[in-house]
Image (cartoon, rainbow, N blue to C red; front, side):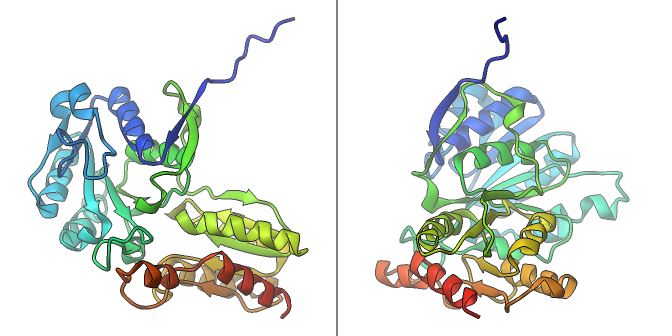
Length: 336
């Protein structure tokens, strides 16, 4: 008997190119989806992440003036009129220019209207250090929005996750901020050759990247990959590390991390950005408050230095957590 079910054909894309692929699939799927931002059309995006969309979808892909306030304001208005806009802010750092529209209008519209209006807006932003863009173009700006009820925050660290989470974000009826890490643009991964809803990644579900029994290691985006490499080094030294990528910061999958902590009793959180007021600090605070009895050692937050991101390559490298620092922190925690 021949099995009629066949696995979907996969193609390999890098992190940069899968953005246009995910946007195209959603523009094709839903005629109410529109896309706007600086240089996203004719130029194909500042980072060449949206090449070909203007030619394929015409006026549904709109170039805007260099005004983040205008971009977000237009997206909010379009969403209230029944469209499902995707707005691009070239660098996440520039979110400061339109911060009021993001936190006081976009995030609060559904609440202040008692659910009578909704703003299904997806805001894409390039974030993160490691590429030599300097202190005003390299920040982990996702931490700026943690204390804003009404916004969902997505931080994909792999090609399949970026593809699946971006498509899910566009379909979500609440505003979603999607942070795309510019230092992962060359990273490769597989996605379906044809649009396939089975590859959508739900918001709020973490990925257990590597199972382990000795230490729970939680990290996102480029820190996820440092964590994986550190886990391999530690495995050779007899320490079994469980690596978890939350994938979304809001909503956060506390259950998966707590389940892991029940096995390991030790926690290390690795994040990009200063430690104070961060998602890593919030995670540790929540877990120690609600599950203090699970810890056999004090949890560790391994974060960037509390300084602006250096422009110098040597200093920028020293500014960020790396594999050696992760390995050292885990080894010290195991010896506690």
